[in-house]
Each structure stands twice: as C-alpha cells, then as structure tokens.
Length: 184
Ligand SMILES: Nc1ncnc2c1ncn2[C@@H]1O[C@H](COP(=O)(O)OP(=O)(O)OP(=O)(O)O)[C@@H](O)[C@H]1O
Ligand SMILES: [Mg+2]
Image 1: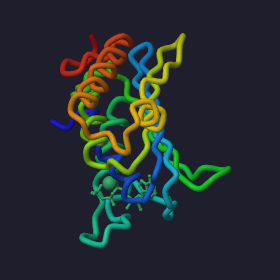
Image 2: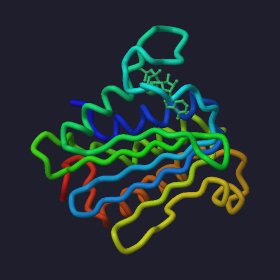
Image 3: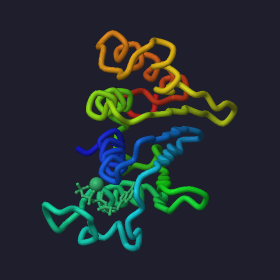
C-alpha cells in the first residue's frame, strides 16, 4: 500500500527533476489533518493539468504518475492538493492535506526515513525541514547550518544521518505522527 511517506519521496523527486538546489519542507499535523508544504527553487514547467497522468516532462515515458496518485490519496480523504508557481522567485510550491481520521486514509509510513533517503540520494541539495503543530513551528533541519557547524561539504556520514533521523522521528512523534501506524 502506498503510504504518505512514499508520496513524499515522489514529490521530493519532482523538485530534484526540476533542478532545484534547495527544498523547504513543512509538515504539520493538527486535529487529524496532515499538511505538507514543499517549496523548491527549481525550474517551473507548465503546471497546467499536472495531476493528469499524461502530463509529464519525463523523456523516458509519456506518463507521470506521482501527482495523479497523490491526488487520489488526498482526495480520497477530502483533502486538497495544490501546485503553484512561486510569485517572487523561480520555483514551485506544492501543498497537500490528508485527513488521517478518514477511513480511506493511507498510513503515514516512515516519514523520517524518506528525508534520510533524500539526503543520501541528493547530497547536492540543501534541505530545510519544519515540523509544526497548532502552537509552534520548529525548524528540525537546515543542511546549510549543519554543514557549517560540522565543517562538512556533504552530509553522508551514517552517524550524522542517524542523528538527523532520530531528531526527525522525535519531532514527528511529538505532533502525533507515529511512523508506521498512522495516528498515535
Ligand atoms: N516541483 C516541481 N517543479 C516543476 N515541475 C513540476 C514539479 N512537480 C511536478 N512538476 C511537473 O508536473 C509533471 C507531473 O509530475 P508527476 O510527478 O505526476 O509525474 P512525473 O514526475 O513526470 O513522473 P513520475 O512521477 O511517474 O516519475 C512533471 O513532469 C513536471 O513537469
Ligand atoms: Mg513525479
């Protein structure tokens, strides 16, 4: 079964394919509504009808499934999905919500591992990750800051990645996202 975490990886991959060098992710969870916002500084393609499987900038095949599948997951719970061009700079903002209390909601899956996989797969991309509940916004990761602090060019060391994974897991748990089992 496709989890929210699987969708998240697909969307991050879209930003990478759009040649983004920076991706800012905000996750919040409040009153059973999971909200995810991803802002990148990639090249903006034509964003019309991108949730149609036959709209893709892929060169290897003529269908793109990431957004249509996400749309189905989101709308199956009465949530929304919106992809828009940033107004003040180049890049894209994708936002979606899922009502996790809905009977058709997919499980969260392992969201912290998605970010670790992303850091390992795309070491050249800077990430900022914010995790919020209704009261507080907290920046959990800023790869630029972390690299400066640790005097690293890239973050590939397993010890550092494991530490980031633990911080993310804790922050997600705190707002009620219990990795494998949906709403905690
Ligand atoms: N962050 C983004 N920046 C720029 N264009 C985007 C972004 N996300 C999606 N798109 C556009 O929307 C299209 C459809 O995305 P979608 O994820 O559905 O399919 P895909 O990425 O082309 O293929 P697949 O997900 O199956 O590998 C992309 O081909 C791209 O043109
Ligand atoms: Mg895609």
